[in-house]
Length: 382
Ligand SMILES: Cc1ncc(COP(=O)(O)O)c(C=O)c1O
Image (cartoon, rainbow, N blue to C red):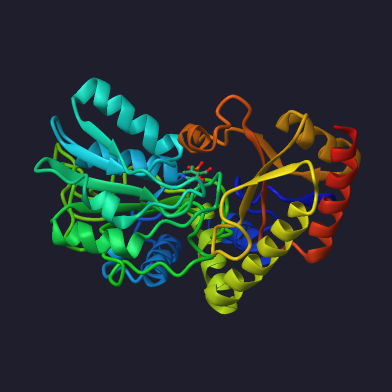
């Protein structure tokens, strides 16, 4: 079986009911939604609508029609950024963003003439909200922040940034890839205008699911045009939600799995999930700290953070750490830049990358003990 500690990339295993829901949908239902009027099509419609409602409830968003399904958070963020930003707009972002945000913004800077400001942060990867406020100018249209760094785990002060964005009448978009399902995220309380989520990480759903949860009052243009199942004689994209942004046949088998995952999370409780993962991360951080040659990055065990820990071993390439863990101990972790070069610039590992463990809800202390024992042996070889 091996020990899977790459939950920052995708969660594994999934709750067994998730795979069952995908299988059951494909075998028992298997038809498209928003297209046919027959009974099975209504069942498919209901699965999709119920999943919108569950996402809406999870994030305390107030209009399920404005929950848009995409393939992943990458597609969702592309959709929002290209839908919102125009020439001369100014955007504020963190110094930790994943390449989905960073490459979209850099491309729009080059091709569309937008301007970008990065809010600075400390070595542990924490931003001060007042540093974000200081960057706002008359052209600022959007603040986009990752909720947690996927390299360091550091949590960003989204509630304070949301309050600032609201006060300055600037849109606020949060990338919740590393936190949705394991952290309490509330659009109303935290003044978030758009939440981008991915279904397959801590939401424990299938790959190929993700989306946007958009505040009722927020509206932007679609970047895709296509079939929506209704108003087909109209030559342009319809302007009502979700069809305005959602085109083509949905991944309903995936959405059925996501629905089941959301029900599982609702049942377990975000607090329970969060506390278990937090305890395991703290346990892992404390153990890794004991290994002399290990250098750890990001917030220590006393701080609340997403469930990743980046580290290096003196005298060894991070790729070799991951290779040895897999080959000799059957422990799966990730090594490299984790698609987030900005975070590596910050901690000085842009040339080397880091080894990264990602703890999930189904990991145990025994998994962490085995990782520790393996790393003690590996570091002795370095
Ligand atoms: C912070 C962050 N944003 C975006 C992504 C992209 O996620 P996906 O590949 O599901 O689109 C990831 C995944 O690594 C991430 O950690």
